[in-house]
Length: 87
Image (cartoon, rainbow, N blue to C red; front, side, top):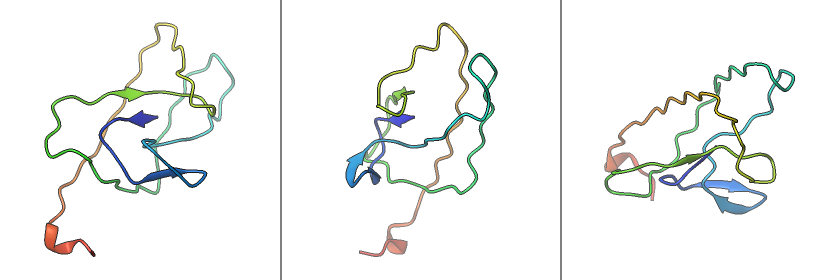
């Protein structure tokens, strides 16, 4: 999944806006229930979020056709104190 408001993600040494990736553990046509385990918080690249776009892609970064199926995504954002950032 790719989100247009984050930075700090890399794929093959190149920066990307990928927030999460996984391989489904069910056959095509079955419901996928995925819960991330080891959360890594990535920096938001905007001062204020007015709009956020998420694109679900395959391993080749091509957008998936969900064929009208519903998709529920929950994001967890947390604010950090600027004095806790190691520069």
